[in-house]
Length: 127
Length: 391
Image (cartoon, rainbow over all chains, first blue to last red; front, side, top):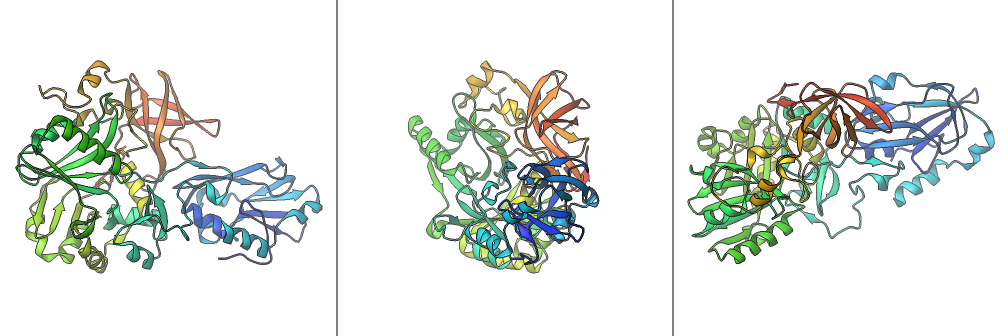
């Protein structure tokens, strides 16, 4: 199971990367993409949208199923990965390179509520 | 006709939300086909399908789909149940049991698609009947409905007092396996794997079957492509699977099977119709013979309640993915999607839907996708056939 140790995670299978400028990038984990199978459609939040932690932010759809992606933190969307609109399969190819959207977090304190790789690994193993 | 991949929305994004149970460790109660080890060796993602542990895909559902459209793929469909119906009254029994007219089976090896209805005219199952000998028939029924079907058939036989044996070929030395090989190159790959079957099978017209030794080779399928469905003793299935793989037939899972049948406009039991749905409202009027004087279970109900809906295809014009149970709004009133997915061949989303009777090909309708109306065009419910896009 591919769970990089330099990222943070949620119980709902999003990953979070803290960028140098203080923004965070959000994607879905390798485990999540594997469960969904071939992705065929991704709906992303528009820049400027305000998100609360746990709010539905994006939708990823595979041939098999649609799944909501939740915002791991509160904040405003500063960018979405528009290339995924035409190439959703990039998430299958490398889930940790294919970020979905970036947020300017409202509060860095919320980062403490995220899981580290070991804790996320336990959740995946227990599922 | 096989029950395929569920496409329910996952909410929240949790592994338990995906309809198939993808975590099988510790679950030993599931039934396994004789090819189970082969699938695991090939890296299949195994899922719970109607109590059977079956391959969903072997890496990429979309690549498997393309392999069938462009070359050849093979499917383990041994979870489906082969039932032998034989005896002096076998034809009389089926004439009354099935909505299609078994008297259309006069030539040896001819196959017939039919529904089996309850008294209210609802669909208990859809199936294929093969005519093996004058009073000797083979029926292939869906895995999820097999136990219920067998109880129903046995009860009708006893009620009608007919001399018929009904034998499910599931257990022991009689157990059968089924492998579907589909695609433009499928027949060549089968001949390579089973050279002794080439003369008899090469001569088969579509919807005919030939018995060669212990193999029943039928020119039938559930993909919209040419190919064969091969029924054989379970003990010989692994060897045939391996020889087909050597011949270049790509293993394909239930995921590709579902998108292929959807593109071909073929109904899926449990999704496009069930016991509460009339075959006339599921696009299956062509399989129901109401004209002949013959009586059959459900006929009176169908005559009393004519067609209420049209069963048509939808082609999504906006971006997104159509799914089962989404609401359709047309100029003639509401309808509902019964099967929907992304079409790998068309590279856009397609669906089958029950629409109001006045709905017609060419109409533009709105589908509610996550509370947002998306535009879709009504098309004939056959999107792809023999590799060609028809809409």
